[in-house]
Image (cartoon, rainbow over all chains, first blue to last red; front, top):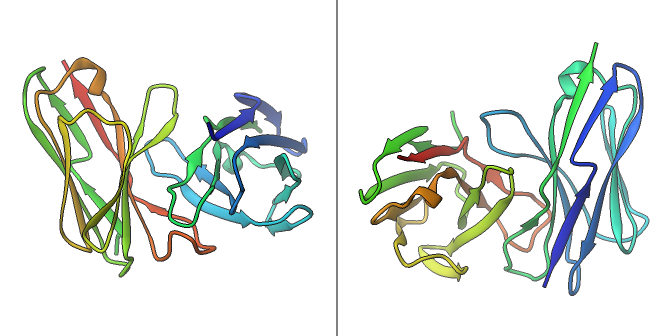
Length: 110
Length: 114
C-alpha cells in the first residue's frame, strides 16, 4: 500500500531558528511529490512539486528537496507567520489522486 | 474571486439525517475531488471526477454519493448520517491530474453529527 509519513508531528521553533521537516514515502512509482501549507480553518495551499531525486525548489524562506525515499522542507530563519501545518503528498500514477501524509504542525514563536 | 468555493462552511446535524455539500470552481479545471480530513488532520481521497465522469471511488460507504451536474460543480450528498461522518470535507480541483500543478482546495465544510 502506498504510504506517506511525515515527521515530526509537531515542531516548535523560535523565530530565526532554522529546521527541516521530513516526508518519507513508500509508493510504487513516484510521479511527483507535493508540498502544501494549511492554515487553521482553511484548505491546503499548494507550495511545490518535485519530480526527481536531487531536485530542489525554493520560495522565500522555504526550500524543498527530494531523494529517492524522502523529501525535506527546509525552513530558514522562520517567522511567526510561517506557523501552519505543512502537508506532503505523493502522486503514484497519471490520474491517481494525491496520497497525503498527516502533516507537521509548525509553531514559530517570536 | 474565490477559485474553489464550498457551501456551507459549517454543518451541524443529527444522526440519521440526509445532507448535501456543494462545491463550485471557476478555474476552468477538468478534474474535481472530494477529500475527508479527520480529527487527526489526515486527508483521505473519497472521489475524483473528470469532466463530469467518476474516475476514482475509494472505499467509501454508499451513503455518500457525489454528483457532478457540469465540470464546474461537484456536490456531495450524504444519507443517514452517522457520528463517524463528523470531519472536515474538502473539495479540490486540478487542471491536469498528471501535470505539475497542484490541487486548488476549497476552504472546507466542517460537518458535525450529533
